[in-house]
Length: 488
Image 1 (cartoon, rainbow, N blue to C red):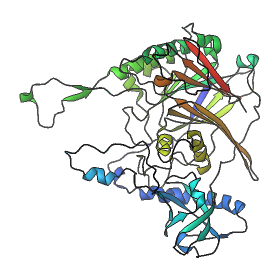
Image 2 (image 1 turned 30 degrees about the vertical axis):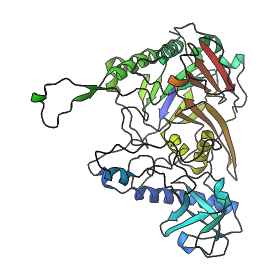
Image 3 (image 1 turned 45 degrees about the vertical axis):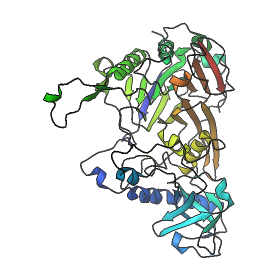
Image 4 (image 1 turned 30 degrees about the horizontal axis):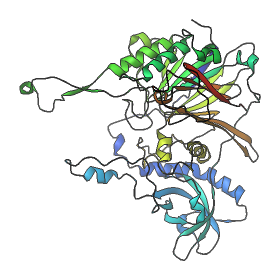
């Protein structure tokens, strides 16, 4: 057992992403969620717009816009997209026909941008829309004039922006000396356990590295003892369906002849049990995991992993998304406290389908969610979510210090800073965690400086996918330290 950096993790109480499902829960219309979102974010958007457009006239409702006069209004964006999946069309299809193929991208030249509120809706037009990053569900202000056709030609957009933070000056990047004292957290996603793949050997190397049992190249590049916590961000298990051999004559009406294999769960449990004995582990469900496809996904019951691991205090299951506050506990150094926002990637993956990528980037979209103050704006339109009536838990009440998203095709990171008039500055480190089964990469973040590093495990070029970034060197045969991104 290696001696590790120590931290504590504190979850929000109550957890805004924990749902209370009842028999009548799903009878509500999703329109309530849009109205709640608009009413909750409208004051913040209005405040930001008044600062930005001091001289412009404000129209309280879309229906009150005066033709030919420059003004601004606040509303909800709706993307009218012909290629958008149609739930009604799918439900009405003949059961004998194959299901509609899910499109990776749903944008087209025929897309229309509409702004709506309680009073009505109006179509937005203008050259600005060609470069604007908008998805359904975004609450924003639009400045412009109504044309003779009854459309609103937009000159500018304004969003709520980042919320203020109580920033602590922890500037400076890690050196050889400070690395031995700083606390780091690790994030991994897309283990895809359950079926034999070439990535299985990489996962074993990862477990040995995290537990300090291996002597890999990764350990020589970065000491595992500096890693205080591990976050597993979804897509951990594949679903294996097995046929049950039964006598058809004894088969009861409605009885299923298939069952789910427990191999993926047992394999995941075995890996997590080894790691959890060495450092705290937080597990979030993901899009392909058996946890329901509706956001927010609820935390897995610890009991499903068996008593050998569920009784380990360092093992925790979390909702997806989730907020956690991680604090250092070293007595000889000042306490560092970081608020983390974590999810397994479904909101970002869904938003990416609205745009050509490139030129739009996933980091750019994730940064936009900070300015929109919303984790999953496309829910419930193109992303399944719980039908809330009087609240919207996906609204960001505060800007997190760390915003970590799993389930991504490649690694990425960016430090976002924004000055807030009269309220100082807000800052957030964005981190995209790639699929480990495809890239062999885990991401490390320094809690003090917010510096980011990656470790890539490799067996051979023929067995693993490409590195998460073409600019990152991966020349070692066993494991490579894949570079850094500077701290604050």
